[in-house]
Image 1: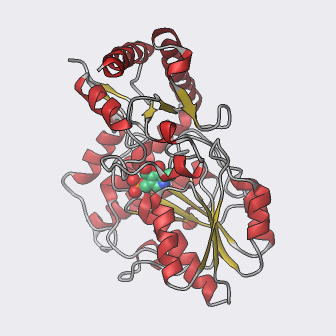
Image 2 (image 1 turned 60 degrees about the vertical axis):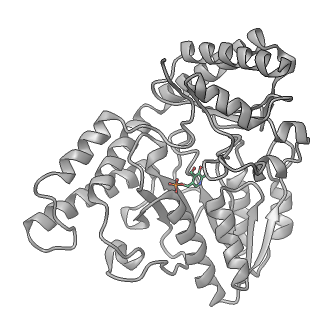
Length: 383
Ligand SMILES: Cc1ncc(COP(=O)(O)O)c(C=O)c1O
């Protein structure tokens, strides 16, 4: 049975160019970038080359980039790093949104336990937060504002630049979790009102376990990890040299091919939605999230009358991989906190499935999946 992978928002397969860069760096001769001998210097120059390439793609200086072990670590390092440094200046407020990834939300809840005041901005029924609500919440006591670029469950885009202008005007550090928008958006970090930005390599066909955090020069920041002076003492620990080399390779290709990749996923997504309209009927499913202001690779759909678990299990049996929400909440029966924050009716909350597309997917796969869903629906609705 052919298998169809529609879970690219969870992770993406490594492209051959990135895998080759990984293998080359991990092979014989791998040194520790902190060592002074030739092996060490060769490893250091791989890390430097990767950092320079990423800085070039992101419009920032190489010194402003910190390699981490994941998008989750980047988010935690940003939030704890800036919040603690800002506390020393008398700022103890954290403002974020109710639809963030758990990497941000749970870090903020932890900061709340440590004495910070937490404000969660509400989302509307499309999952968007408003700059007006952010403006009412951000004041001279706010330490950090964290707003994601694009949502990992629905794809809905947030007005992070507008909110960033407000945050910076009031002296708060602006953090953006851009993990899910990576590969679908271009940033010129010099010009954007963003102080910190989190990215992760495995969302753009790079390796798992490598993250990146942009920290604008001058941003108040305390490290999360203490030890050696790697990453200019902002993240102690031997760098993942092969992972970093592979990450830069994947990023160069993702930015080079961005327009074509956007066209590909839009084409697959539209073929999928059109086929569902034909095979299942317009009334049998609903799109969750914003209809236009969204990432192109995610389609979060509810199939009222069929629980998410039931649909996912049947899809899996038919060889189709999708997801019930973020990877951390799938497998549990909890309805997604994102869809809950959007105040969707229980029927839609309990029947939501996220399909996410990427390199290698085809229209044929989309059309085949729509037929499979129509068959599953017919079977489950009469049983
Ligand atoms: C928006 C968002 N933030 C953070 C993360 C965490 O990234 P990582 O899996 O690299 O820890 C993810 C992963 O799904 C994500 O989608």
